[in-house]
Length: 243
Image 1 (tube, one colour):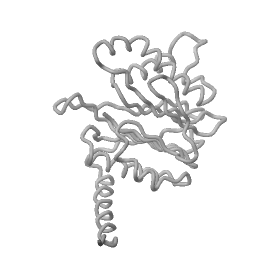
Image 2 (cartoon, rainbow, N blue to C red; image 1 turned 180 degrees about the horizontal axis):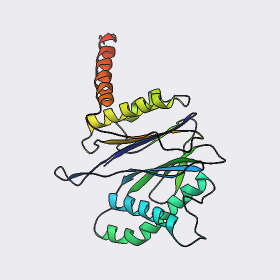
Image 3 (cartoon, rainbow, N blue to C red; image 1 turned 45 degrees about the vertical axis):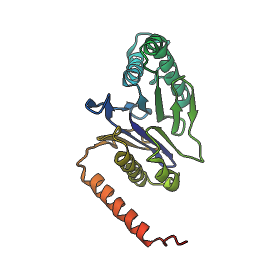
Image 4 (cartoon, rainbow, N blue to C red; image 1 turned 90 degrees about the vertical axis):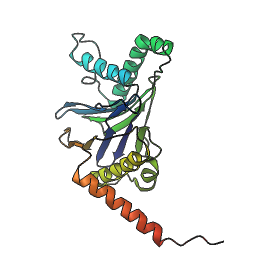
């Protein structure tokens, strides 16, 4: 399985995705699930993927091929005028792959399960974020809940629900996202490091704040141990239940 998170904040966007793919406990691999397309000064588009790896890779490849295609009349990630149009392109690519592979997957008892978090900014509008489903339809993140999760999200959701604020600094939000991953990693073996993360500042049109966090990363280790200690301390200080 996988775990991906996207936060839409006043200062920009934060994305993170794990890299573990497994087909059983003895067949574990690492694959990139956070993909970025960039035109410096004009646009940054980020796509985090979860679900059937072959299907998500086919969608990513199709989107990239369309950019370099000789068909000048075809809209692409690099020519779409708004992020809404980009979301529609992602949905169309999902449906195109499903038309080719969906029947064969169904016949072999595999399912066509994919979902994406799409986010970015095109010059002339504010950053936007969407969740795209296997049917090719999508929703846009709202102000009440400024984050999206896909994959194994249940373990990392509680801290996001309690702490996420739209006015957070990006570094503060990155800390929150990593704590959400820490909770997920402790409770679900199908999610694993390294973690790919992107911090995008509004109007920067740059992906320079992109990093891969390995298992031995000093900051992540310090954060994980520190969070465990703080939780134990907070638990001990709460009043005990009495009958």
